[in-house]
Length: 391
Image 1 (cartoon, one colour):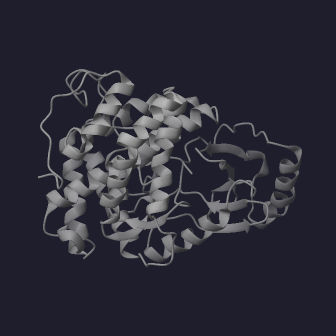
Image 2 (cartoon, rainbow, N blue to C red):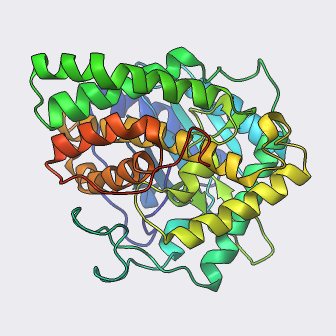
């Protein structure tokens, strides 16, 4: 639900069908007077990787000078999850949009507008390639962004919001991030990235699955299921965090409709190993340590010795990040090949970096590193590897 377009120059709105447009007009018309909406300002605000999209409309109401409309076709999107998790977000004390109107059967919602500026837009741009490359050759380098004081402040706000979300966790409230779901997500890598994007032939893929992928998938799942559990946003990254209205205000949180109950390591992994921006390793460590210190002070890391051993915790974060990177590589390939959203594949090299960096540090992951190097036609890295616990 990234809200990133200007309200001063409305974008034309097109509809998937006349029936969908008529349904919107029927729903929207009575809301114009009720909420003092300026119907002539209705414009496309953004779209995301799902079938949802967002419109923005200005209002004469001083308390809500602009509002956002979610357009989520009910045959493709379940808006009830968004509504339920919005309530959980508010109960946790997070800045999530208020829901002003909701038509469940039509898939339309009128929401509080948290602004047009995401945390991502406030972060420094990547530096030129070269000395700041994420990893040494033989991989083509990935440009890093260099954090500044504002970046530090924003990431600390992000971990404050994350801890609030995790502290509010209750079992049996959200769907479990269980073995079956983790396995389905990992299978996106072999189905969409290897088979579809890289063109690995079926016979070869079956060999890779039997000899490497399925055993590694099972190892990744078992590592991740051993972590303490909490609410998991599942896409907790700067593109889904909205800038605060003042330095002492919290970040807004969006795009949480797929939240689950699962490994506490997931959201800090996705925050620091972003799909669209990369940071120097020392900054990743710094913010992860700050999160760990605050989380253990709140009693969130009592299992598996995580509260006493940052090394054990950081290793668990790396294993969780590996699962996410394999999944997202598959999702980005699917978005490109199935949904014609080709810009997502431009960030695939970032995930190859992330995957290889983690695999090069753990002996158990050497088979996966060898497979990735084969598929990507990369000469093997000679790197020191860590043991099962990253020690």
